[in-house]
Image (cartoon, rainbow, N blue to C red):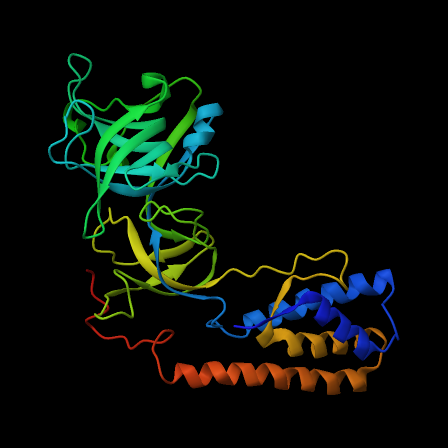
Length: 361
C-alpha cells in the first residue's frame, strides 16, 4: 500500500488556500488539527480498511481479574490474569500441583519477559502442593518475581514444568488459608480466605472473566508484540481463513474489551481475533513543511480537499466549502467502493449465523 509524506499533504493544502507561500504559525496549527480530524473521519468510514485490518491474530484470553488490594505489593498483583497453561502431569507435587492451571498478570506495572522455554519476572497465580508439615492441603498462591519453565505443545497448549522466584517465600503476596470443608478448592475463584503478606492490604476480590482486552503489549502464546484493537470484528477458536474451518465465538464489547460468550473451556489461554487497529493521529507538531511522517495514500486526496473545505468555513465562505466537501467525499467514496468490491468476494467481515456456530464448544 502506498504512502505519501506529510509535507506533501501540507504543501498541497497550502496551495489550495492560495497564500503564495507558507501559512502563518497560527494557520499551520489550525490546519494540522483539521488534518487529524479528517484523518479520523476517513479511518472511521470502514471497519475493514486493508491497512488497518488484522485478520485472525492470536490473542490471550483474560480469565481472572484480581482487584481490591493496596500497598506496594498489592498494587503490583491487582490486574487481569491470563492462563499460561497446565502443570506437567509428572511434576513434583510439592511445588506445583500436576494438572492445575497457572495464570500470569497483565498488569502494566509487572511486564514479564518471554522466550520459547521461559517466562521471567511474572506475577502468577498457582496451586502449591503440600510441603511437609507446613500445609494440610494444597493452597492457592499469588506470587511476584516468578520464573517459569514452559514447553509449547504441537496443539498450541503450554505445559508448565518448573517454578522459582527471586526472593523465595518473600515474594508471596497472597496465600490461601481455606481449611476444613472448603480445603483443596479447584480454582482460586473459590478461595474464601486469603492471608495478605507484607506490603499487601485491602480485601482481595477475584472475578471470573472471558475477556480479550483492547491492548496487549505481548503474548504468552507467541512472545510477540501485539497491536491495539480499536474495533473487534470476529473471534475464532483457532486460526481462521486457512485450509480448514474455524469455530467462531459470539461476544459483546464493553469498556475493557471483547467478552466472549459460551467459551468451551474457562481456562483456554488464547483465541484468534480479527479486528481493526486503534486509531493513532499524526504526531506532527512542528516542521510541517518538511515532515516525512507517512500519510496513507488512500486518504491523501480526501484529507487535502476536506481540510481545505474546513478552512473555507473558517473564512465564512460556506458555498465554496460545500463544493469542496463534495470533491473530498468523491475521493473517499472511490476508496470505499474498492472495499465493497472486495467484500463481495470474501467473508472476512461477514458471517451467517446458524444453530451450529451458536453452540458452546
